[in-house]
Length: 335
Length: 138
Image (tube, rainbow over all chains, first blue to last red; front, side):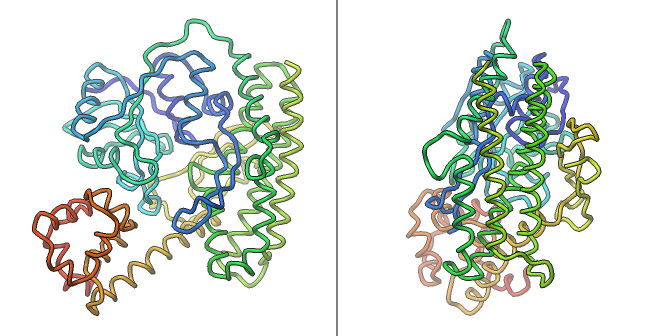
């Protein structure tokens, strides 16, 4: 059973899945729109949450939040299910496919064999869409891939029931009701307001642009406190979170800037376009940071910036983002 | 980032399977979508993460070959897992899995328990228990 499904590649898995699912149901939202309205941008540094002994950093909100916020703001009703056994989960999936309904689901990257081997760590919050079944193999629209692919029953069952944090437990979701009329402009402003509020106004040191400043401060001392080997490992992890996991930090900054660009065209608001340009610049700085940090990790003798300089670079970005999102907050308040 | 600046580094770990999508700006500052085949810092960071994994796998392999650990340890490392994670797959406790990483405890495992471990690692029981195989890993 296959359905007529149009796949478009996206930079980030969750917003890409939402965009592709809604296109099937006749609502055209570009990925940055989904990301912006769902308030996907964020920063958080979690030194006490250790993954393999490495402190966690995230340049985005928690998995699942984008879809939730987006559907609330546009007025889409979604049905979500989780299951106790792989058999039940796969039978439920088959039933939905028989009805001709593409289904979004959470999977572990480790078992998705169409991805390059280098990406296949145990990362359990990857979103994909399954939209059909042919010769016992499932047709998959993975938003990070250029084209649709396919996967075997066994691999998909394993990917949906991977263990560890967070456990997908066969979670799947699909929209059941489309909004009749919705206020897109209002939704855009709500999204902007929440993102800028969370980036600048949460009174905690570890989140938003303050979190980035805090990370910059701590990062300077990593070599002396953690030793060279660990410091380099931790720095490598910051880059991985920034650049790799769903195109990461600078990538997210660019998606968000793309959203502001689209929003400014829709709302005829020049100020938003101005802020989009500035966010592009600070995203570029963040990429510079990753570039130099990558050099440090590779341990090249020439052009190696020390950790103190890296800290300065990150702090500059943090200051810049603080200013940008404060202004964005002021703009959204006047609407 | 300008659309001409989107990195296209040939040296990458994508095996030609993946060209990621980037958002980049045109000359007026408006956003367009551009594909990128790879970027060096990202590749370095990913390679570094794999180096750590590979080191641990090699260390485990040596331990198994010298008889200090059971093949289970090797397969845990090979699958980038931890005893706790393996325990949740086979339905037992982390410390039990850690015990089974010792050869003397591993030898006493029942066929059924071995099958559970083998299923988790997607190999056969023979592959799981065979130490000889580890002398020349693929």
